[in-house]
Length: 335
Image (cartoon, rainbow, N blue to C red; front, side):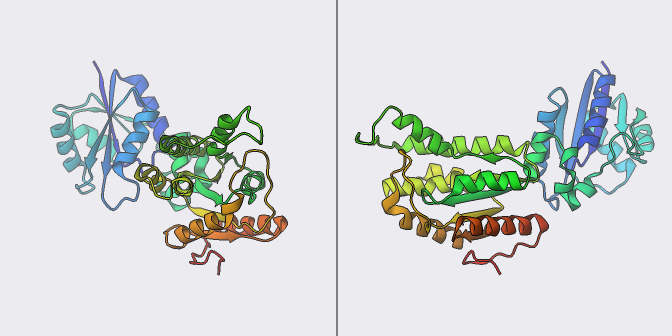
């Protein structure tokens, strides 16, 4: 059985790495891919291992500390100790490869050293990942895509604005799952029928499903993903009905990725579409969201006024985010 071996930082994994690993895998019976990680690296080694395990399920992915100097002999000795044997073949795209393999008594195969097949590097991606999303597999792409979340009280234009922004920036958006869930609950009821109640478990389900859908669509988004609410906001909806917080919902919300929040103000007419029940508490919901955003770490912008002005303000905030010039302010009104 032929054992192949690859070592690298995969910081982050890109399609050049995929070309290397795919090439190697076709030539050996068993392939071990070693990730060397260091605490100074901003993408955790565990995350990179999870990505490679998804991208290359037929390979063995291992994670080791990057504690050695850039010395082929040190790495050769470490590799032999780690594997308990010499690999039959070492695959690299770097100058160190032939000597590293020789020191282990292994054959070396150089793969696309000139980067002709896949013209990309981890350094270029880290410098400006949004410019190189097409060189990333979907699971890695989702990590770098920026997420803009629209939150606010009922009937404040979140859904329309999310759709408009997605069209404006040539990307996709995530509808509000809670709305879909609610429509199923009230299906067949008339306006005179009493509205059904909410269980605590429903909010946990809604938060988890909203996050799962967001994570799936981030894999195909173009630079930015627009989200019509998120799991963070679900915690406040729970509070609206139960007058308390739920630790399970809040935990899902705390883990949600957000790069910018757009808070839509309740200064437009409330439109009853047959499913809404929050007209009386629009101001309370707005202030609750505003307080949470003002005390949180994520930049946010208050979106208010006529609809045309809202769209212009939202577009400006997103352009600033994409351009790296977004300024954080506690009042959400920008610099």
